[in-house]
Length: 259
Image 1 (cartoon, helix red, strand yellow):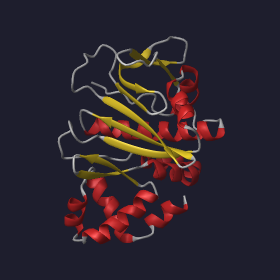
Image 2 (cartoon, rainbow, N blue to C red):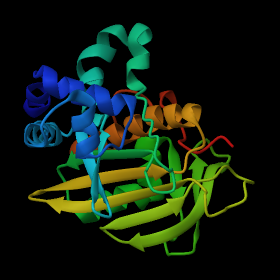
Image 3 (tube, rainbow, N blue to C red):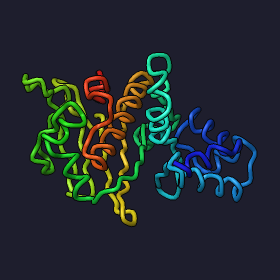
């Protein structure tokens, strides 16, 4: 948390975050052109923002794209704001992520969080039906083999699946990719897709979420609120054995597309 506040303390770094809020997924050159800054200076500021986990990066060919990462901001909200001003300031948990580049190449969302755990444990908490029910409010059910169907089922006894899809890639402890569809929707090459990348980071784990191929601004806003809550709850569940005080049914149940 100290790194987050250090990164936010500088007005230049806040301007860079504002630029990413306006248009996510920018290259170093685009960020420099937008605020009239030299590349060396911008690189130093971006390194501090990445150290504070306020931005994340993704390689696309030779380009390095920068994305606003709202998870630490959500954790600040949960710790110091929601406890006192939850009804009036609830909208702070919605972070807009917009990109003007082709959605076939630029992810809609790139969230990064660091968890005191092992890759094997993070994988288990993402894929075990009982564990996902404990912190997500839904059970993720599948055998998690490539090509298999998976379902995001309600835990109210009905067994109804609010999200369904196909497992595209599955490397236990490392990577999970699947399509995310509303039941009854036809799966296509442009279907919404979610990727979890799990990487050792010293003695902890770096978890990266990429959610791409969302339909429009409203769908991106809904996904932003849902994923921010889910990732924070997952982190708390792994590190403490308990979900956040907010009950699972108070969070967005699903980040599935509405179309």
